Each structure stands twice: as C-alpha cells, then as structure tokens.
Image (tube, one colour):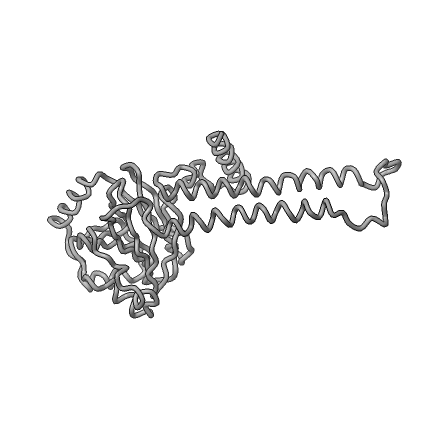
Length: 294
C-alpha cells in the first residue's frame, strides 16, 4: 500500500513539474533516496503531500459544489436562507480537521528533525569533512586524512559522514538530494549535517542558494566508494596531488569558476581561522566540531 502511495505522489510531483515549468527534470532526485537520511525526509515529504491533499481536495470539491448549487439562475431549487449565520457541526469540521493535521505533521517533523541531528546509524568512527562554499566553487577538507578537494567529494559508502559547513563568500546552501536535505553555509558559522550513502555511486550535489553570476557552476559530485577504495584514494592523493598553500587558498577565495581539483595537504588552520575572523558564533562554544576522526 505504501509503495502505491509513494509512486502516486511521485507521478503527481512529475505532473506538477511538467505543468509549471519546462526546466524541471523528469528525474526528481528527492524521490530516489540513497541513504537513511534521505529516506526519512522522503517519508516526511510524502506524508506532508498526503495530509495537505486531505484538505485541498475536499475544499476544491466543496467550492465546485457551492458554486454549482447556489448559483443565481432562474428556478434554482436550492434553499434560500438569508438569516442563516452559523453551524457548530461545520465549524467543528473546518477547524478540527486542520488542527489535527497540523498536530500530526508537526509531531513527526519535530521528531525526525531532531533525530537527524545525530548520526543516522550508531558508529564509533564517523568521517568528518569540512565544507566551505566559495565564489563559485566548493572546497572539501578532510581533517583526519589531511587532504582536500574542490568541486568533488569522496566518501566511504555505508559510513556516516559529518559535514561541517561554513562559507567564505555569500551565504549558500549545501544539498545532495539523493542523500539528504540541504543545510546553509554562512560566514562565521559552523553548521553540522549528517549524511550517509547506502551503496557506492556518484551523487549529484549543488548550491541551492543564489550567489551571483557564477551560481550555475556551483555543482559537485559525491563519490561513494568502498572503504578500501577510499583509503586507496587518500594514499593516491598523498603521492600525486600538489599541496594547497596559503597563496593557493587565497586564489581559490577570489570569485572564479574552476573544475575539480585535489590537494595532498592544506594549511591545517584555514577553516578555523576563516570562521573566527567572521565572528565564530559556534566555534567559541564548541571547538570540538572540527573532529579529526578518520
């Protein structure tokens, strides 16, 4: 039954995209969850659509019935009651049902939202990745491995990843639709986002907040691989990629569009220094957010 409802909601979403805009892809990524976080969020989306439909559809049908029944036409048999003012039954229905729907939706939204502030699965060795949105590119730093990348991210499959997000440019929004919901990147802030990929694969990510003329180029891929492949990738970068120097970092900060880049090392304090120079609202309270678990 749930599978039928899920497919029905997907088709309704595709139909809405087709009717509302020509730029909406036929492959709605949020309805193709590839991890525990995105599955929870997909369930919330479907539940929200169903609950809203419970209200919207009867209201539309009732509107059609009222207009058709009480329209001003000759010999209309509908009762004419100019002194009618209220109905406790109707008042209870159109106030009671929305209150129940909002309460149900609010309960599950709060429950799942707070659950997603923790790793999607209990593990002792999550991977921490520091993410910085720049103009117009994404930089990923691995504090446990001391390597860095630009415009692509490598993660082990079936292992929770804690993304710690900030910005050294206008505010943006980090989003990998198949793995989970978006989280904002803001100067002076260090925001957490837990994601996990169930299977190896390449997952599309992009900035979901308009940030100027290069916004369309703020795309990246998340490569989920087996743990052994991830370890081999780190060793390969250590041997072959150039180091990221402070001069190189300052060059990345300047507005520009670049392709994928890899670095065998980076100045270890640039992420913390960048946040602190903008105020460091979270860093002053919780310096352990940078964790170095490998």
